[in-house]
Length: 483
View 1 (cartoon, rainbow, N blue to C red):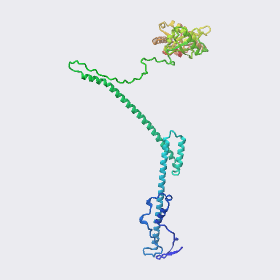
View 2: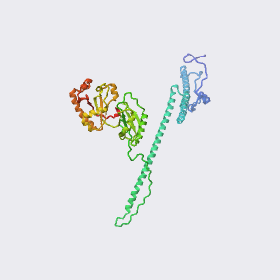
View 3: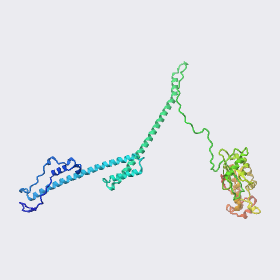
View 4: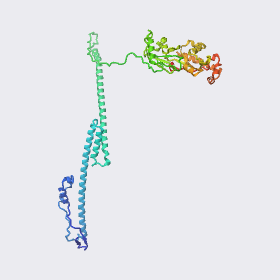
């Protein structure tokens, strides 16, 4: 290195070797010579201005110092020039990078527009596109945008696709609503036009009558008024009415508790292990017997079943009534239970029943203790002790439980059901028996004591209280088949 001594201060400074320094004009020239592809889309605003064609004058090292240009001043001047040059150079480079960033943003915006357009096309053909095509489209968009979008922002592409599809579905719903509204509007317009035409056609005869009245002379002249001419108006075809003018008979539900098409056939003396016949065979045999007689050949059994008490339920057709078949019950009732002496047959009607508790079954009355009084015997005894019952219609009188079960279980007392045809008879019998019950309570104690009486106490009861404790309950409206 060469030493240089300042004339003012006499100090020696080390100066770096002389290197070619580019001025701003040279930098502009270099940028203008550089291809546009290498330096980006440079804006014209970065071109060299006209007033800076010449480089700045840099003080020579051989120049003699002046009073105002000492060694310190010359050093500061050179440093200022270098700072200005490097500052301008950095500014130009920053502007170039900024321009490249804007170009990348423009490319990204263009790529996003292409992506949105592709997503819209797929959304328009969504009915023909499958889920695999949609997934492939999403992966393609994510891979293409990886160079522009950071990994943490790749989900925005999927969100964008979802939004496009949601907008498409919303537009489809709006279009459907618009079509429905348009159809409704057209319907209302047609209806209003038809109503208007109808009003016009209706008002035509009235207008003709008014015209004839106006032409009739008010004086005594009896000239013949002109006959109004009516044009044949078009009559709208009337819709055929599906409703019948006559009220049809409401069909009866076969599963109801009381059905007038139902006939009940029971044998009180059936054993517990009674083997029921097949319902199909019972229906065939009963229909054959009914067809043999002229008075019953019109009746047809359509369904047969047995309940828990071995009672046979015969269902007639919906247009037939069991009360009409009841007078001819002797024709078919023994066919249902062949070989049984006592067989009852009655229609399924709504009766008014009174429940009597604590009636002796008759097991202890027999010599062997194995006899059960039939319901008919109990009914005759009750009618003999109560003459007022003779004038009332009793539809049924039976034990609550089958006689076979009473005999098997050895019941000394059980309950009977007296069914009256009229509700008034049942209520009157209830009031009368309530008075007798109060008298019996006074004779044998309160109700709790009477209910807990044992067999010896029941044997020692007097004749007027031979039924033991008689508890007349409230009136029940239960059918016979339910028991």
